[in-house]
Amino acid sequence: MLEKLKELALRYEDLQAQLADPSVYGDAERLKTVNRELKDLTPVAEAYQAYRQAEADRAAAEELLSDPEMRELAQEELTAAREEMERLRQELKLLLLPKDPNDRKNVILEIRAGTGGEEAALFAASLLRMYTMYAAARGWRTDTVELNETELGGVKECSVLIEGEGAWSRLKFESGVHRVQRVPVTESNGRIQPTGLVVECQQERSQFQNRDKAMRLLASRLYEIEREKQDADIARERKSQVGSGDRSEKIRTYNFPQGRVTDHRIGLTLYRIDAVLDGELDELIDALVTADQAEKLKNGGGEP
Image (cartoon, rainbow, N blue to C red; front, side, top):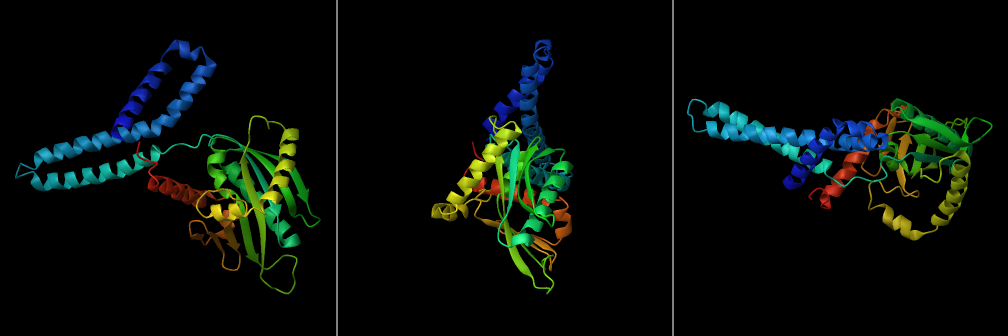
């Protein structure tokens, strides 16, 4: 790992030098490429620099151990340096995990009401609002491609293009069945009724850059979804991946009577359903990203 880090540190220095080259500023495309690579490498370079500093602190503390008057202080500094090195080592392992080449792409988010009729459609409208608010909080742009509403203001199905840096890297974990448990707005007898709906996130590709093409994509994907529901292989495969994006997987439950949201893939429960539905999804998504990274590390993805 250290050899890989040295190579990346040299590359980081080279990119910084390129930014001082007038010829780079004269080439807009090259400047964009350099800045993007530099942005990707900066967290690694900074963490590696901090690791080297901790390493130097450890060496200095070890030298002081031979001095009786400084031994106690040196031991404290040595312990702190070793702990910092271990923390940074774990951080660097995560930073060196292979990046998803699609993480920078935009997202086409589809929501379709499933079991539960009008109540499912009303909750689909709530999820559409949730994702729209989350996108706004992150500075992403949203464009509604298709919206099929009910008379009561619910959403039978919708398709939204979400554009912004890192949209796919965050929303790729949202695909699957979302289940809601609450007293239906359409019921008067107070029964808690479970309903479900499907969220699908897919990358926006270059051939789908306008509304008409996105609509054709939506139609073809809806057909594909119905066909894939009958494929038993998908159901067997879905449990092996944290962020699989398997559309038949029940990934999350929104329980209104208990005020909780539970993500079943990682066993995380948050008792603040109102905040989540107001677009505060980062705690959930951060936990999913962490679980995904841990799975990759377990499979040896962090050691070059």
